[in-house]
Amino acid sequence: MHIKDILIECFTATTPEYSIALVMTLSLIAVIFGLVYRFKPRWKYLAYAVLTVFLVRIVLFGQYLSWEFYKDHLSVDDLGWRQQGMLPAEYNKFFKNSHEIKYLAVGSSQTFAVYSDYSNKHNNLTVFNLAGMTPLEYYLYRDYIAAKDAEYILLYVSEFDLAKDPNLNSAKNGPPQGVALLEILPTLSRIANDTVSENALKEMVAGKFFPEYKYSFIFKGFLNKLTKKNEALRVQSLYEQFSPDEAQMEENAKDLTGEMDARWIKYNDYFLRKFLVFCAERSFKVIIVEGQYNPVAYTEKAAVLNRAAREELETIAGEFEHVRFFLVRKLWRLHPMTIGT
Image 1 (cartoon, rainbow, N blue to C red):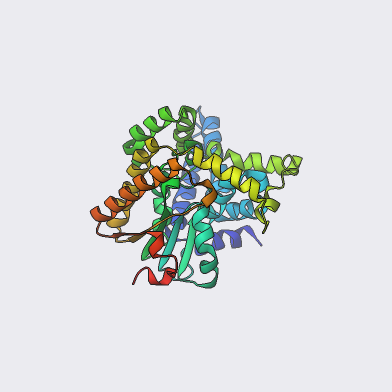
Image 2 (cartoon, rainbow, N blue to C red; image 1 turned 90 degrees about the vertical axis):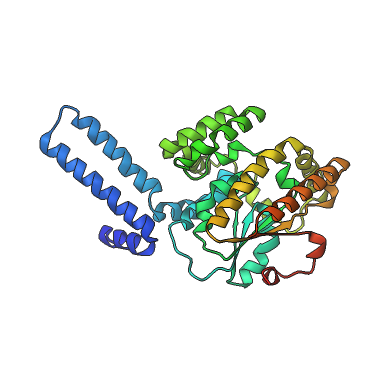
């Protein structure tokens, strides 16, 4: 395929938002390059260097072909759960929906486990998930979620989500927030202080200006693949196991729930509410289903957090007209198709 054909495909296959942005950026670079070449200022080499950086950024991150290559060639073994899950999200953001979506299930790997089978068989439900996704990332990825243009957004939320620390080390690689970052920065700073993750917050801010730094995990992933650093871990093969080690599952579950704490609820509640306000502004209806997790992880502490999380979700549903909250005991036989009825 010739370069001309590739460019035509890039512009016609992607949404107008990204096509227009790409055309304008390339045109601006061309104009500046022409002016520098014509007038030859003393700082011309610096200008050429800066323009080259912007061109490289476009090649690496500014169009879908690169992201398609990354998602097809980097596995969980190369990147880890979270980073590998980001690749399809970054790739899909360039495209319009291929069909109308009525339900969009948003959340962590639990959400994927609950809805993926139904989604594979029905076109009206799509899953948007990231490993360990918390309400903080509902908000950070709000534009990606809104682009799906679903009538209903399904959230599978429990104390496992609300009482878990908002992990800035995961969130730092999220989409650029623009001026909205200034609004949430005070809350992010308090989270960074309480979770001792100040460096992650600095990396989040730095990533706004230096995408090659934010997405450096991609380069590390290819290095890991080249050196076969993680070959012995065989994470991908473990993921595909149909009969996981039950003892290991129980140990992992207890480790995860042991990290839950009531002090994190206020932060997750803050971002959940901001996300729900965002949905209301765009006329999206939100269905919050009370989430569940492996019974072996339930403890007395988890039961207390369960009550606190349930009360908070019931309060939220009462405050927002476009939000409905369902307890799992009422839904154990409920089909996703019936939620909106």
